[in-house]
Length: 350
Image (cartoon, rainbow, N blue to C red; front, side):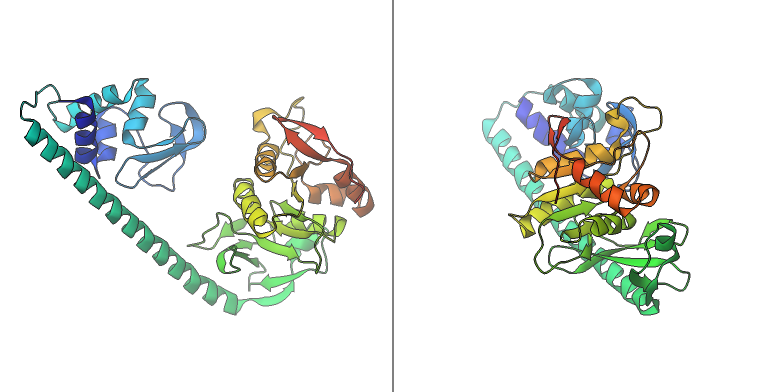
């Protein structure tokens, strides 16, 4: 059997069966796309997700994404043909058999190609239905929760030194924070308890969604922060900016890209969280907030402002500790353009 035919045969036979095929090759994958685990190929702790989608689809923050054969390749450090042979042994495919009739071989390839195309269409249709069901579920939940909320101040924000800001407040004192997509549709929501515990409402489509805390008539720039309190503190420091919060570090990049599409000429600044641990001489790979902010800024030709501390801190922490005037000066002086993992400081006296 030709190598290309073997690969097609394995891909066809393994469709919808990848978890068991991988398990037979001693490759453990999570049983839900919502679970994050160590990567079977490169380790780590929670960098790996297995979506499957009938194709063995997966993504690792370290060694990348791919399908079932790609995962076998990475785990066994082999090429695609060798990976297909390993899978063929599990699936009972005799790849050593010779195909003497070219017409039969051609017909089989066409059949496999047509079946694969049909499966792809079915997967896409199912994915679209899943998205619609999730959106409908979120819309129902959010509408019901929103009807229970009353506009008011939050004990959580007061504890962050931020008085005078009103949001929808639930009966238990939690903030209900709506997140919108680029069309302005509420597609996600976060609740924040008075103690600062944060949760997404079920069905939320968080990726690329954001909450706007400040919309000046003539925005000078766009500022993106992770959390709500940080965004509000930065709004006080630079009131002429269109300021939004992305909820977490992982959402900074999608939100930055959305902001760039909506505001193609405005400067964009990422108000980064400094996740450096106390005593660390270098931020290194452990500084999640800095790394995510620099990646987001680089993708949109933007800049970053990082709190100048040697311990974990965001701009709200800095605001509370040093006051608005000093925090504003620090924010302006700490703006820099990421360059190849390092940075150059740019003083901005906005």
